[in-house]
Length: 138
Image 1 (tube, rainbow, N blue to C red):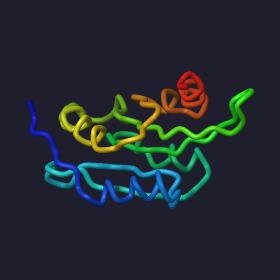
Image 2: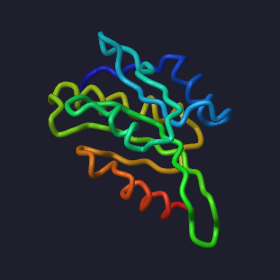
Image 3: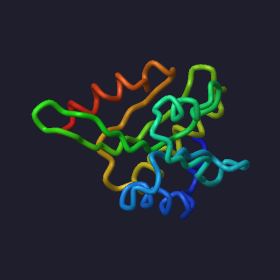
Image 4: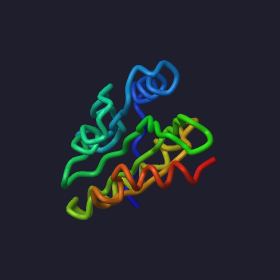
């Protein structure tokens, strides 16, 4: 079993900036170069879901939190903090194993996540997939 990476404090700071202060639309996390620590790879305030998808590399794993806003019939505008585990089929097996081993360490440190989704290709984390999952969560 690979070692579990620790969560860098900046990850929690940027998550709080997204969650409480609405400073970001999303935060993308990665492992540092020696795979011992989870770090912030990117923050963005772009409202475009396509920009978010573009920040998920084709052949590398990432984690992300996205502040997903949508209209719910009869309930108006809704927001769901969404945790995304991105492990594309094209990523190498070693990286997938390292990310799988450390996922829960990051996930446990992020309070307030409403939706969790795992994606191996862009269709699984596409806007419509996320919308369906978010609408199911009350």
